[in-house]
Length: 540
Image 1: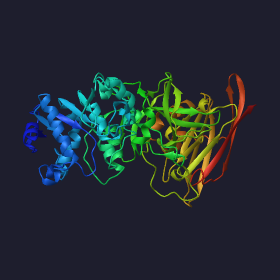
Image 2: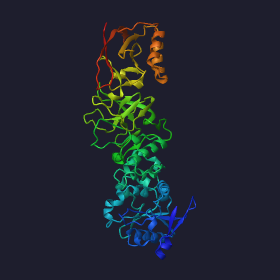
Image 3: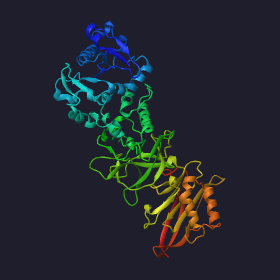
Image 4: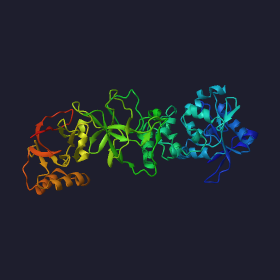
């Protein structure tokens, strides 16, 4: 760490440095300020003639005077204590900056545009990205106006600082650690702040999330994406996904990662309701997106419209029983993209859901939209699916009253099984209570045409219970493919022919169940063959 010798600056008017390594660092003061264009003194020009007329030199001089008054011999100033011509030194400094401010004996905040303390909130210092960590990290801060008049300390101004920045007073006063604040809320503190370079929007937040990562100036928005990936690797906090896109965003879908810190502006009152360290959920970054083990929820908008949702384990005040969820659309086996709600507004807003017990599932969230070109006749959903078997249930049966397998290839929104290009998973089973099952297969023939087969089974059929156990307990976990399921059916049911109509007893009444199948290709649903299966029930 390179520090300015304050006494040399004050007595001789020259800037001299001493370097310190490891934990052997003396008490030092640190300056927090906003830069003036072409007026700051860089490391390479500290004692050159060109620096004498710059406003930045006066800031360094005054910071040294204040330090000596407090009995401190060393000062750190970001403009001149970092050799920015060295990329290695710049990377080390930016990754260490939060700790440097945190370990300072005192931080002097110079508000160059403050003439009246009554207009404190209008100061540029509250709108800059880098000054966020400079407010939070140091325990002791002293604020000065544009003529270096003392206006108050972090302690005496805490309430007002909290009102201006939306940062919790306990965080400002170091009574609550940053780690106790959910990720989304921490991002919201920076949502209305700006940096000169787009990459610095991410780099200035490294200390806020206790993250270290290399600097790649020129990567643009990629820096903010990398920051989110690093956060995923360090903490299981689903509030990272609680951002809301701008209203100008077009399209029905988007990735699960935010494009900008501004997307978190609505998260300032959000709080987590789980312990990040001991929550049994897991999350990791893969080459596809985010892989996580989490409960899967379904939002029901009415009796016929459903949408998958990811519960975020966070809430907002005033809705103490409602967990926030992100609506999402299934694109592939257990693979989802963020989606608009199916309500009248059709927004990307988070949706509340009452807590209920759902089993943990391993799913993948795409962090950005697929980049492959989508043919004009298709959409992002239909282009991801090659085959589709859409089920039409009888009026007396609701979707939440049936069981499906394999769940990873079942889409509750379309009430359909799907298969991707080249998939051998082309089978599906639906169980109605414990008495009735519909099983189907579809496959491509050597002549490149497709064939579809379906059958109904009841508890009266030999092998029903064993087949049900295999399909609904083991098939998903072990990845049963269509040939395996067909062999199971033939072995357990002794080669039973496919039946399209059966009688079964439901609630002490005999009912007849039958189905009709029709191939109706639809490019808005899938890129290949689509079958419509109409299941009917009646007395008989």
